[in-house]
Image (cartoon, rainbow, N blue to C red):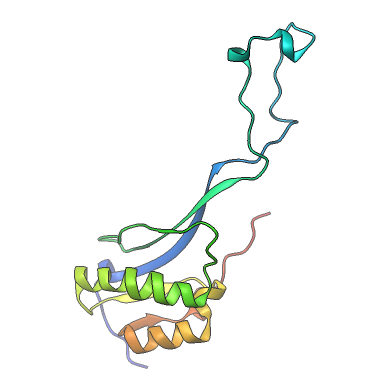
Amino acid sequence: MTICLLNVDNVWFSDEKIFMVQPPINTQNDRMYAAARKKLSVASCRLVKGYKHFSESVMSSVAISKASKTSVHFVEKRTKVDASYYRQTLLQQGFLPEICQKCGYHFVFQQNGTPSHQAKLTVEFLQCTVPNFTEPYVCPPPTAQT
């Protein structure tokens, strides 16, 4: 096993995150207290606006290092981030060209163990493309918080 000593500034990590734009409605937590007996008796400007029943969300993805970051890539609505999308859109068209532009080919790339990151074709692609690639088994997948 060869150990390549690189500057810690050139260790890159990528991940995706879903941000909730509007949380789902929860009628137990969204209550209004008023002296009126009926909702119709309260002026509409004093009523709390209702929420949609299904959450609106946006997924973003970015690669970061100690020294820099890539631009944020927003995943289009209703797009499943599977291995193919991750490899072709986020890695090939997004992160890797930006990382190479910032630090050449002298970098370490790592990712967590989510299914799209540890897919066989994704791992093979990164092994062939990235000089120093930390394989997914080194970073286990995230676990649900209790």
